[in-house]
Image 1 (tube, rainbow, N blue to C red):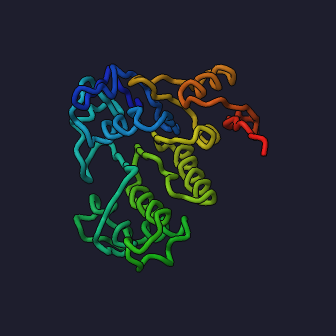
Image 2 (spheres, rainbow, N blue to C red):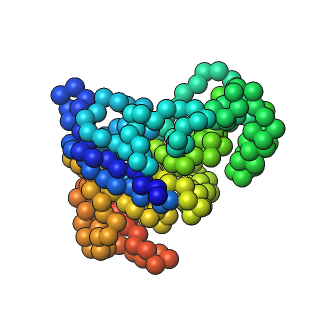
Image 3 (cartoon, one colour):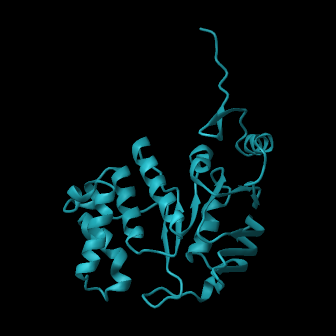
Length: 260
């Protein structure tokens, strides 16, 4: 039986600054869970801990019943974890197809098979990127780079998918395309944990929602719309208006119009 991700009393300090304070959360398997919060609230730190990029924390993290610190990378790992950071820099002009192929390296002993190439082709075509396969990664726009990095993660066929701001740099068309893809993966059983800024886009697609504030993480999935609006206003320090779109609450900032 799949057990999801359990964060148990996790704390993390950056010098004298407490970034996470005894956080507890349970992210269910086969669902799209979204972590919301302001810049600098600790969302990305928690992401790095779950992804295994940060080990200097107190407390416990278990993924599908396994201690995070004991999960090793490689083709024989018991649970396959794919993750995409918010920021990525490279100064080498690798081809797009080679960047995405690196996502298959754990399964091919560094010699890509026909199957690896087929998976890469299928994934690039799903985002209309196949025509860019021979272009250098460094020549792409910010949005195109973001999509290439997402493809690199998707070709791993992960059991658990961790995404930090996956719609960053993307135009509206590609934001929807990426979220549709993530939603489809969750529907097929992939566990997805996604850090996002836009609560409206998150709530149109997500299953479970969490809010990071004051080094604490709280679940807001089952709040009624009035309580949810109050929590978002408190977190983002904005007055919000409330609308309904396709049966879901949408929150917009109230802008004070000034007379000309």
